[in-house]
Length: 154
Length: 120
Image 1 (cartoon, rainbow over the protein chains, first blue to last red):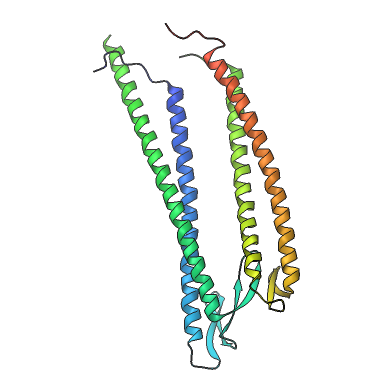
Image 2 (image 1 turned 90 degrees about the horizontal axis):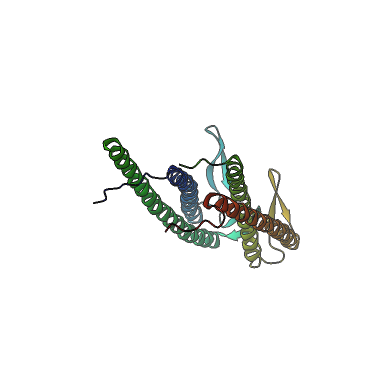
C-alpha cells in the first residue's frame, strides 16, 4: 500500500479529458459514416429487388407509380425494362442491361459491406482507447482524493 | 503547482490552433481523395462501355447525353485537378506538422527547463 500519495498533475488530467472528448468526436464521425454506408447498402438492395421484378415482368410495358414527392405520384410505363441507366459515380450515367446492372449493384454492396466492417473495427479500437483513458482519469481522481485526505490528516 | 507563463500559454493556444488547422486540412484532403477514387472508378467502368454506347453526364439538374470520349476526357481532367489539390494540401499538412513540432519542442523546453539536472 502506498503511504505517500502524490497529488495528480491537473494538466495531465486536463489532457486526458481532452483526448477523451476528441476520441468521442471521432467515434461520432465514424458512426455517421457507418450509418451512411448502411443506408447505401439498403438502397442498393431495394434497387436490386426492383430491377429483378421489373425484369421478370410478363407485361410489355409495365405500369408503375412514379413518385413526385409529397405523396404525389403519376402513372408511368417502363418502355425498356431490360435497359437500366446506372450512375457509376462522378455524375456519370451509363446504360446497362438489367442483369449487368444487378451485378454492378451486388458488387457495390460487397464493397460497402467491407468498408462498413473496417469502420466498425475502427470504432471498436477507439472505444477501447477511450475506456483506457477513462480508467486512467478514474485512477487519477482516486489518487487525488487519497492525497487530499492524507494532507487533511497530516 | 508551477504557474504557466503567458508566453507558454500563448504557445499552447497556438498548438491547439495548428491542430485544428491540421484537422481541417486532413478532412478536406480525405474528401478530395474520395472524389479522386470515384473518378478513377468511373473511368474504369467506362472502359466496358462500347464507343457508341449511351453515356450521360449530370449537368445542373438534368442528365445530358455525351460521347464516351468526352466523358473520359472530362473525368481525366477532373482527376488531374483533384491530384493537384491533394498535393497542395499535403504540402500544407507537412508545413503545419513542422510548425507544430517546433512549438511543441519550445513548450517542452519551457516546462522542463533548459538543461534541468535530473533529480538525485
